[in-house]
Length: 165
Image 1 (cartoon, rainbow, N blue to C red):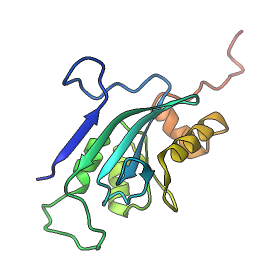
Image 2: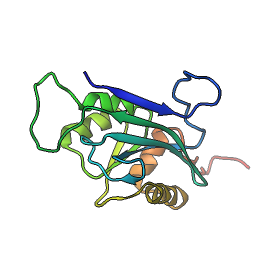
Image 3: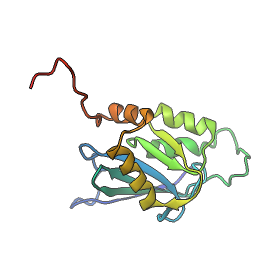
């Protein structure tokens, strides 16, 4: 059995559910071992820092911690021992996941859950990742990000010739 712990920021209720995504915010998960840097592979990440990111700011929504993670040996345990599905389930509601590496089956499960995985070549601080995400939102987002934003209902409406002023 996989143990999952969640640390969520709540206003006044002790057992409040995961906060709703702020209007216009992109929900971003970052694979981390220490809550300071993007420094983990998806399968071996002990924690995921989850942020809401807008063009102007970012806010920590929650930290999700896992006890049972991959040792990156490439060895699979018993067939019924699935360590990936609990991670995907815990990240539902996120639109993007940043990690150092991810296997094909894990990436496929994330995509099926409408979470876009992004591999980053080397470790970097979480603020650097969030600033990079903001820059993509502020400038002309790449096509894959425009698709993610449209799916999340965040995309800006494009002007149409049929629109009246």
